[in-house]
Length: 401
Image (cartoon, rainbow, N blue to C red; front, side, top):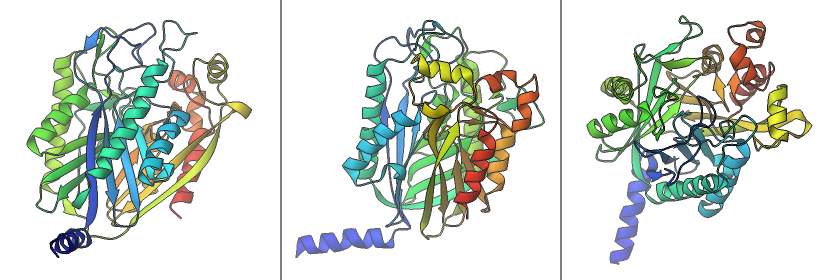
């Protein structure tokens, strides 16, 4: 009889709960020297300033189940993400597409794409590290699901124009900071999901220490003041949405991270509860043409280890509607602000997120007309080609039908 009562109480809590949520954080710091991603070739790590992580949120309305995982990495290709998702799904009775994995795009972490090795013709990826990351993704998802408990969801939003700026066009920027706060039935924080667009590149090419950059200080402040675990999900950071700093130092990274953290505290003051309704989750598979000869050559030379057969790559986009209050669209790369704002305009709820580098890293996503301009020559050289943005916008529209 005692066990029947405990089971009844347990089920009652879940039935009465608005949602079910769990969170985890697993360390993915390499224990040996690696090639650092971004800012040039042949930059090897010489130590660790702060650990980097895989941070996972599990969320369910009792029927729909999904995981959102944030990685402190420059990016991962679709094929590498799919390997980890399939294993995590197999262990937890999930489809791989129930799992959204997004990278923060930090520039002082391991090269996981291959472009920053000892020279431009040699991959910088350590295969054993890539396998380690995949194992840790599975572990983080497993822990998040096992820690799940009844939860309440709240959303908040503010703007911050002090942290980031668009160095290509200062008049074109999305300064919105959108938050999803996850709390237990007693109002204690479980997780804080942050969506904001900015390259984590306060630290520059002279830095040889592993660090999550300003994201480290953002997490420290919010977790100290709010509690729970903070996930940072980058937005339309391309071309070039970068930190507004005086110098490339850890002191400046702290200032930027804490400034953004204060915006999150401000967003919490005006948070709104999401009343319990079902979570809508849709995914669409897409094929993107590779029109960039540099990318095709890099794949042929196995500098970038991804399948570009037929001069195209497979990828995907996701759409979420949580309680009719928050809608989310993902994109598989670094959308420029104009593209990010166009994607966001497709959404109809009061609170909106566009999550970049989600389930892939395809490079910069530019409007087609930008390819003819000199100012965007670098971004054009690091993109799949002029058709990508249009294809993603069309896919976004299909997801919202």
